[in-house]
Picture (cartoon, rainbow, N blue to C red):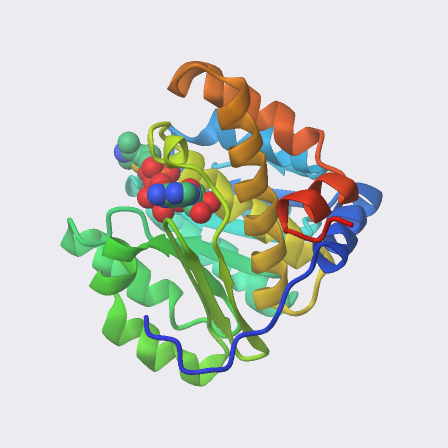
Length: 253
Ligand SMILES: Nc1ncnc2c1ncn2[C@@H]1O[C@H](COP(=O)(O)OP(=O)(O)OP(=O)(O)O)[C@@H](O)[C@H]1O
Ligand SMILES: Cc1ncsc1CCO
Ligand SMILES: [Mg+2]
């Protein structure tokens, strides 16, 4: 997606303020996500200070989402049952005005995923987080959905965030983040947790991705490859403080 707005500036204090609200309020994020990324997503949410719930049964997802601070829908391993659970989550998000983050995993690869993504994109006020391939495959539907307050988050070497109330670029992170499956999926969950405590979704996404990217930079310095990087990423996210954010964001002195 091309940037059409002047970008906002994010400083360490604003990131730290969002992180502090997550830690203080411990929002629960109801995640309907893929079977590959469930574990890393739940652990990353805990490291971030949030509470994961990974319920998937079609007859209980609405109840589970009802008291949650935010909802994540990720179609990475969509199956016949989760296809039916998705509309139930959309209904709760709409009726209870809950933040909803949608991750259109591999939407470029199948007509079913295209169909489901377009159903989800009919909902107002959602955040869509995908990589460049996924966001490009949905370009027309994303463009149309901007009419109803969509926030677009395209991750990669530089994360691009664009919503009705602001636009940000986040240049933090490390290439090892692409060598562990589910790191992108977990990013969507962190954005959802931030949206539970920050009403501007673009700011919430930028704060979450800045924290995640900086945790990735720290983890890369402490690890020897993708396996140890995964553990180090969880540790680094859990250990982030405002002084570290300031130093990594060039605000020292
Ligand atoms: N080349 C890179 N350098 C630094 N950070 C990166 C790079 N590529 C991705 N990231 C970071 O990795 C995280 C995941 O983004 P990515 O775009 O790789 O997700 P994804 O492709 O959906 O991943 P997956 O589906 O495998 O979980 C983001 O926080 C992003 O900023
Ligand atoms: C590898 C994989 N396959 C379906 S979902 C997933 C996790 C990364 O998106
Ligand atoms: Mg992905």
